[in-house]
Amino acid sequence: MVDDATWERLRSAARAARELAYAPYSRHPVGAAALVDDGRIVTGSNVENASLGVTLCAECALVGDLVRTGRPGDRGRLIAFACVGPNPGPLLPCGRCRQLLFEHGGDDLLIDREGGPVPLSLLFPDGFSADHLP
Ligand code: THU
Image (tube, rainbow, N blue to C red; front, side):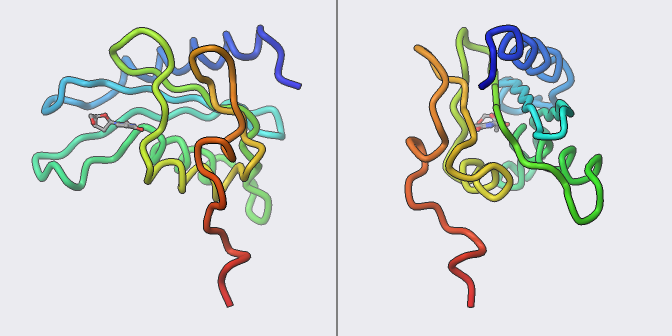
């Protein structure tokens, strides 16, 4: 159970991360924050590049934060995720980032969405995972 105060904390951390975005090309800064099962809050901002196709979404940086600050052997699982762009309300992750989040949070990861959080399985059903590898 993720309470309202925790969601507000995540949204606030996402807004702070948005301030640190590097988005000179799109002028579309994005910030993301997530609660980890060990209590950490991890964050990320988008990082663009003159070679536009290699731009990193905020979720990429967030996953980097999760892995970098976790313990080797147990990096932690994502429990709840909030993301904000320049427009009001939550920003929903792009397709590639749904795959990234799925790796570290699975079906039950809660995603902040207009009208209330939803599990990642609703946005990304039947995700590809390590279970599908030989
Ligand atoms: N962006 C993200 O950071 N996350 C998403 O899930 C969607 C898009 C960024 C990438 C790019 O820097 C800007 O938003 C415009 O697409």
